[in-house]
Length: 338
Image 1 (tube, rainbow, N blue to C red):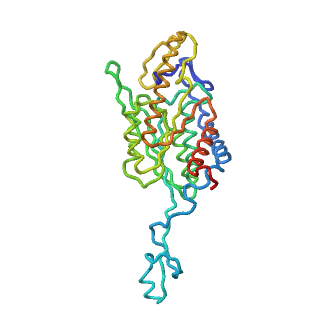
Image 2: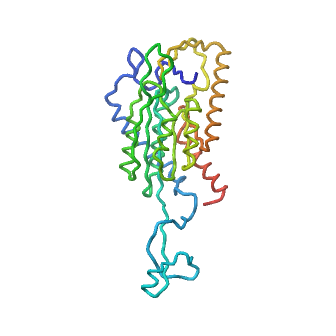
Image 3: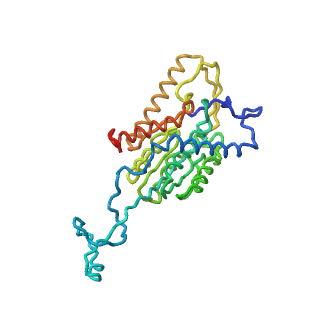
């Protein structure tokens, strides 16, 4: 139901006579310009809301050994450095260095169902924008960010039943630095969306293997795959990491307009159907089924312990991110000033 996408081309996309996107030789230059503007927009509008990557005001004592200094009244005697004390005949304590480096991993779903949109952007554009915003905002202070990008697999041949979820994955190692972050964003934006059904569960599980240091894990997808496929890997991911799930959706996935007979095609299987949208009962059933589907997705994310951010193609995604960050900060600080 919700995977069906109208074959009417989205606004602003050049098409040929068949309704498919035509090749635009200037697309690469436009992408670079859009990413540059996006970086400025993100840093200007969100900069004041994400000062600091950590909840506490002061770091903990840490576990990495640092330098030594003379003992002062009130120091923890368990940190006495006895070899240095014996050599200098003066009591010394060993300092420890707190680990302030944060590692963030993105699971970016670019399956065929993301190449659709009837609002201001395609769902794919919102996915790239969300990945860029998170990359620029979590890579400061030596923090590292990496990504696993998933696309669709090859569709099954006609007459062989429902295609299996195969998917293809690209892993970008976690690195720090502005240049590396820009390379990661360009890799996400330049990934080709392949036909066929992707495997969101396998994509999320790529963040569990190999086991990584504790940090932040972000899953960006439309979550149209059955929750039974990705709910368990998400719960497993939550054991070691703070998890943020960014759900991208289009208004036509929630309700159908009354536009007469509408040809729709499943972008992952290629199946074509004609839907009589003039039937009010059909539109009502569609809206009910879509609402139930989104409620099931929200319940699965909540059960997995993930923070849930919903971005739409017909709304200001950056404003929604600002509001979400402000709400998260208010919840963590319980409304107090940090």
